[in-house]
Length: 181
Image 1 (cartoon, rainbow, N blue to C red):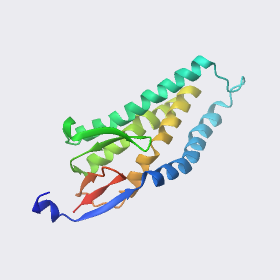
Image 2 (cartoon, rainbow, N blue to C red):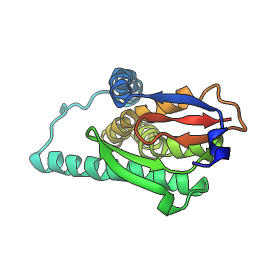
Image 3 (cartoon, rainbow, N blue to C red):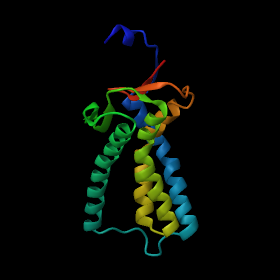
């Protein structure tokens, strides 16, 4: 760290993985009620009920696992589009939670885009699309992926009062970041 780096004021905007997982699980209920309720309001419940074959269940698990990887890759893409090189973006798993980490500071809005990208592309857009098309499977997929992005939504909440011109450093071990003033 250089002397210039040491003189930077930092404001912590983080939470532990445990706290993020707790809040994410609590907030998942309203997400399922919102998208599921909208689907049922528009299309009603399926007359045949909710049944799945083993093939459908295994397919759903594989799709979910691939989507988790894509979720993190979308964060990485957001960091890259925000100015990071691929060599400055790290991927891994901590406490059974996959993550993407940007090693360099980004502009606040670039960081926000990187954080919201997976929830929007894999969650909100498919959930709303499924509701509009009458596809319960697509609505369910989007709802699950929107719920999976609630940790990201918590980061956006932590940044709600951040000054627009601030730089943001992704935290290497906690959920969130530090504001560099």
